[in-house]
Image (cartoon, rainbow, N blue to C red; front, side, top):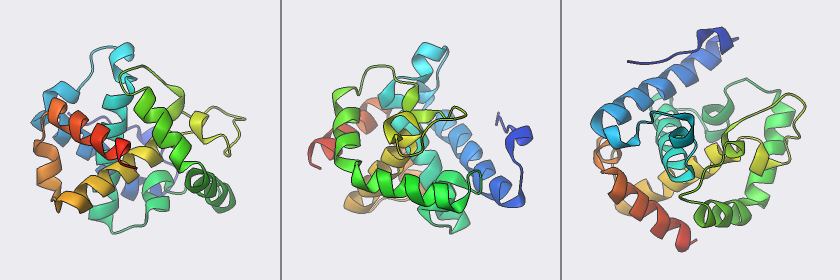
Length: 170
């Protein structure tokens, strides 16, 4: 089953980017059910969220042939805000990777949410987890020369091990 919050998709571009993202989640959960969650506590475990959001964003970017900026935001935010956010992600990437590594098996909702009035420059509390997840999956795919099918086939334990090793080596 695919959950598509169409009421939150204000434009054609958003639909084109986020529908494949949500379909990727469904395919990933079908192939590796251990990544699914049964409670909000499970949902926001950093390891699970970083990997599943990274995979879904990577798949969306790949199948739609869009850039990372578009795969991460569509046109949800104005271009200036997205540019500032991406600039901050690049500037704070090492800090974010260390944070994810140190909190890999803990819960953190802030890495993946946006609240009205939040500062886009505060990437640890403004969807920075999506950026870290995408970059992590990109590095894994590149280093191991993987296909989308390959990334859907890892067990959760294997993917978490690979992700931790990749974060450790950055």
